[in-house]
Image (cartoon, rainbow, N blue to C red; front, top):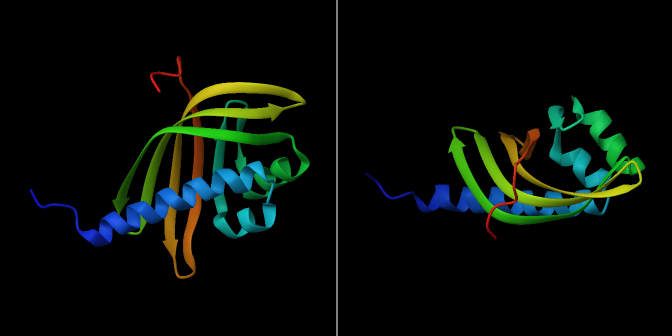
Length: 134
C-alpha cells in the first residue's frame, strides 16, 4: 500500500482549514464570504428540512439559525478526483428561533474543486444519539 502523497495530505489539510474557517464565518454571520464559498447549487440538510444556497445565506444573515460555536472533536477527509468529503463530529451551540440549543452532530461537507477554488456543494447535519467521548 502506498503512503499518501504530500500533495493529497496538503489538499486534505486545505479542506480541514477551509471547513474550520467556514464555521467561524457562519458564527460571525459573514454571508459575503460564505456566498463565495457556497456553490450556487449547494444543498443544506438540517434537522428541520433541506434547502439551497440562497435560503441558507438568508437564514444565516437573519439569525434564523445562528451557528454560535462548533466544537470539533474529530475530522476526516477523503479526496475523490475533484471532490473532497469531510466528516466532522462536532458539538454545535446554536440559537434557533431565539432559543440556544446544543447538539452533537456528524456533519458531512462535500467540496468540489472549481477553477476559482473549492466550493461547498453540500452540508448535512446528522444528529448523534450521544456526544461521545471528547
